[in-house]
Amino acid sequence: MAEHILVWVANGFDPEDPHRTDEFSRRCLDLALAAYARLKRVRGNSVRFPIINSVVRDRSGRIPLRDILWDEAVRVGVDPADMEFTIETTGSPTDGLAIAKLAKAHPGAAVKVFATTKETAEFFSVMYRAVALRAENHRLDFAIAWPSYSRADLKSRAMYRAMRLVTQAASLSRPMFLLWYHTLNFAYRRRLKGFTGTVRAR
Image 1 (cartoon, helix red, strand yellow):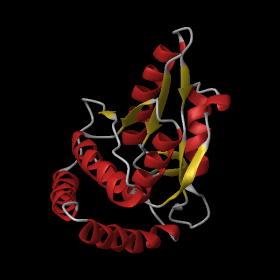
Image 2 (cartoon, helix red, strand yellow):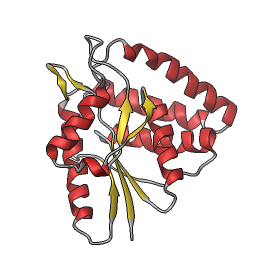
Image 3 (cartoon, one colour):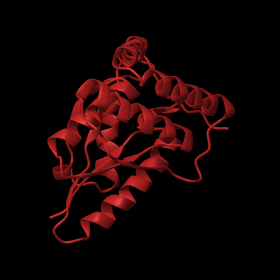
């Protein structure tokens, strides 16, 4: 039996309607859903579709992102029996920790992450592996995909490229990376009081 873990990493809330995710996230979910449906058709496959347990809230401070992610995945056809919440997260460092813990708990599983854009995918590839290695002492192997037609604005692309470069440099040593990890987590605590997303449309 082949075991698969598919992880949808959403961008955030729709700026006009906090009861759904934004367009980047929905496109990413469509891609993840296509992979999920394809794998489910193969007899003997075990397919997990964990939901990032994001505790960040919309701008009103009332709606947690995790609830929107769960509801949208179910609405498009993911079987709740294949879903589970990860550990709580607030951003990419803790998302990476959640994925690393899942991978460690299912060592034979093929992990695939679905990101919203090319730049976020490149950043996640570095951040998630660094978190796994430096925080969990685990070498995380995963594939990553993103919708080819999703393009962010220049500011979003530049931000994620810069974040990737800083993370690459920080990951060279455990103390330096853990300082970067905790710095980001401290900064992301403000998302508990109000958040929309980090990727913006052109």
